[in-house]
Image 1 (cartoon, rainbow, N blue to C red):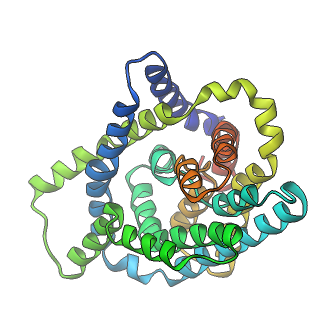
Image 2: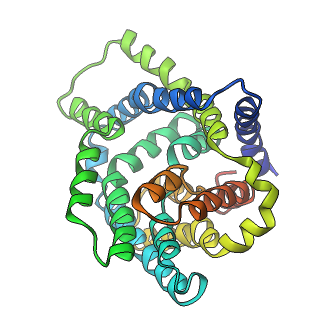
Length: 313
């Protein structure tokens, strides 16, 4: 029962953000500003502070790096085989969405709030380690897989463009700076530390309001149609991907807390940017939007289920 109450406060805030957008309180520009503020202003101090506290531990997680990369590759293979031979036979653009989105979780706008609700500050500490260790392979493998389906192979320009974006990503920069500061023993004055704590404290509410405002819940009126068309990829994202992560982490063990956080983040619904990136890359963006809606809706059930399986509730 607690698992349901773990998600309910988050759902209330998501619906609040959606209704504020639907009733004109938030415009599209306002939602964009919320996301920009979260991405560039609020999350970087949170990630810097938590990776600073973690210190060089981030650099001592080879099992997490290997296991997560192996999980991503295995998930892509399962999604590709299932979509080509069964779910999306003959529809290349949907097959591309299937492999591209198979493990792209909504870690920032939903995953972090869930982890904070379930585990508090300690959970965010572990979540920051996960982000710092896995982001590069997470981004490169998903985009390369999508391009390989569409064009027969990943484009060099696409990979180089993604590497450039990763180098300028404020979340990655914050993690790297946190590790460097810890490695060289830099001390942070308590005034700046408190400022970062206050800034990061706003992350959960802002992230959920922005997520709610960005979701087109009007599509839920066609929910039966959406679920019937996306069930395969929804199953891959909410069940198969986290199950594979569990399996590889049993072979390549990490700490219990980091294991719980890693699998829980793997079990998150698809990230909203799946739709944005799918459109930009020439995939079936409407199907990607339906997939985001379907996984987010069913996440109300799957997130408490995984929290129970992982012993987080």
